[in-house]
Structure formats: structure tokens, C-alpha cells
Image (cartoon, rainbow, N blue to C red):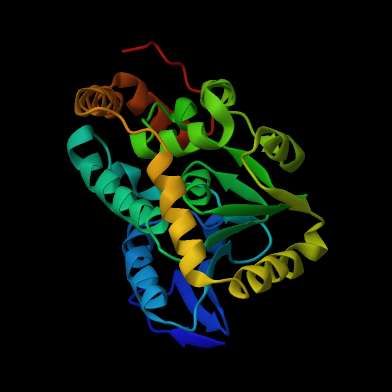
Length: 267
């Protein structure tokens, strides 16, 4: 594999023939996404998109415990303690996820172990999601009192429909790989030992097809997804900001640090 030099060692980018591999490399925190990891994602995609040899991009987590276990919450108190400071996180994560979703080349999330919060966000912005039977998927924003990006909610609804989307967000529970497959949150589930070979087989099939056709179809499908009106988007942003400024968000952070169940009051 040919490695791409990056400004952080928490992301690894390597090309292997027609495949561009992106590895979330923070195994000590189950590949939780930190600020520098969000910042590196657009840079990696720019490199791979400019490389004509790369036909498919695969995102995966280092080790066998997690794809991405969420945001690096150790940064919350210093970086994201209110809506004012959380703007930076929202901008970084939005830019990274827009870059993933807007890539002209097919993308695959290779999911093993935990895929939580930001992990689901990243996976949902990929074109395909292939998981092994150890995968656990959840969006736990409601357990922390934080908001979830509007565009990423739209992607989840597009994948599973409004009913399942509400179940995912309202319960904040972990879904097994078979449950996620039934909902449409993942495309395929395979045995853990077969995950990489299954992903490589998909990559081989895609890379052997016409890139212009795939690019045109990808653009057409994305263009057909409904968009929020400016007024609706502004309302969503206002409600998200209120979450970050709430007493519940402070309680969610305290409960997480203290390893206890939060007591939310709706204020």
C-alpha cells in the first residue's frame, strides 16, 4: 500500500490499487473522532479524488473494537461546552461529512464493532455500509442532551424512513447488525472473519464498472433526495443551538464523566 502523509497520526490514508483506504486510528478511545481527525477527512478525500487510480474509497476503524465510537467527548469541556464553542465542532463535522457525501467516487463504510453517534453519521454519508456480525450501531445524542446535525438526520431518514429514524434517535439504544440490516441502515452483514474479503469483492466489482456511469448515477440519486427549505433549516439550527445551551447538556456531560445515568429536566 502507498501511504499518504497527513498532519495527524490519528488518521491513516493508503492506496492499494483501485482502493483508497481511510482508517480512523484512535483505538485507545475506540476510534472516537477528535478535532484533528475531522480536519483531516476533507484533505484525504481531496487526495483520493484527484488520484485517477483510486476508484473506490473505504472507511474503516483501527483494531477490532470499533468503526467509530462517536465524538471524542474528552474534548467537550474545553472545546464544546456551549452553543458558542460548539459552533466549531458543528462546522468541522459538517465540512467533513459534506466532503464524504459529495465525493464523486463510490464510498464504503466497513463497520466492525461499535458504530456510535458520529460513527453512524460518517457511515450514513457513505454510499454503502457493509458490517460484520459484531457491529453495534446507535445514535446516543438524547443520552447526552446534544443536538444532531440536520443534514445527517436527513441522511438517516433517507436510508431508513421516518419511523425507524425516530426509533433510532428517540431510544438512543444500540442496534445489532441484523437489526440495522432489516432497517436499511446497513446494506449487508457478513461474518467478522469475512468482512475485509467481502468489502474487497464489492470494491473489485465497482472498480470494474464504468466510472462515468457510476458518477452520474450517484449524482442523480443525491439530487433526488428532498432538501429542507431555508425557513425549516433555520428552525432546526435554532433548536440545535438551544440543546447546547441547555441545563440538560451540562447534566449530560456531568453524568458521562461520573459514569451515571443523567437526570434530564427539559430545560
